[in-house]
Length: 512
Image (cartoon, rainbow, N blue to C red; front, side):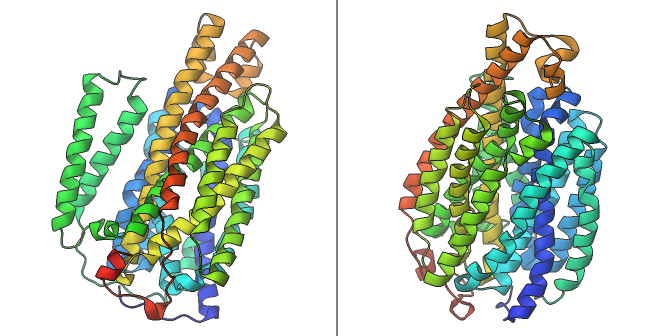
């Protein structure tokens, strides 16, 4: 990419109108699907595959983000951004037509491929048109879509699940996606074109896919489908290690690496990436598991469980807005990751104390704490990563940072969901002395099915869900606590304007 072209305030706002719609599209998908998950996995008899409905999506977007970032550097943001929207829409339509869990997981992966381009595209375009020192001013505009997604998404998802059919949780993306395509086609026309030399590191992309996929399979199957010491898990571990080693070798030698390892030479980038991974771990795990607790234990409907997520999301939005303004006015950001990791750890510890007697009010308070921590971290970690990279690699750096966040999400969902499911089933069996079979098996249990069963069965299943959530969030809190240590090592490096932006890497940048 060439040196970023200066945009006027009006041009920035016009361009951002397209980004806002695309971000709303991606945010709405997560908010709409979350309340529908208990019904979806019950309807398709797929409790054991609960993790993969989210993991398939997140894993695909994880692998795709560095590819989209690199393609944006080479081909230009406009064509890659529009392509990602189109792929996301095709995946959404196919998800709605799924007839079994296998199809749903596969089509969610296709949807995730497009979503990876949406998120990295929004961040990379914003980095192209607004220098880091001024970005907090416009972050507020981007974050303004969050209330609509947070309020509208759960309401729409819950209403669809309760009154229509869960398939419309995916079909609803289509009209908004068409609008996003049309708007972005025009407003992104002013963006600079890519370098024009298209040399995609397909070998690196393939190796990246291999070691990430096998790693997620280990965390999903270990201790459930197979023993941790089984040949299958040990074989996957060996393949993960070999794939990672081969990936590093290939990336060191590639002319246009899919994930330039040079960005990891910057200490602040590495630390911000580690925090992104931890944020993804907590964020995706929380969004996936909390509706389970709310619907099965607290008796909330799908609509209400979606609304009950609002304290976490609104807290994240408000804190992110305030943090963006603080960064813009002062130029300082180091305190935000420290506060964020402390709050996130505290929120997860509080969630680990939930049981069958925890009220919705208390759950809401816990969400505020976790959401405030996420708000301190989500935008700040990306800002640090982008400020630590040369301008001509901002797409690749954004992709790498987003990759780490999504990888954390993939690992978080797979590990925490597997732990949740195993604990739930063990608790249910030990309480009842047997497992409910047939159409009312635990794997086929929906909130509606559970309410039709005898009271002892309802209590046993609710107790199992509570035990599973406690176990999952306990380990989530342990992981988040490591983020406090990481945040303490971040150094303050002045945020640059476009005039300060280095075009290539320098020793000073690498050692910042």
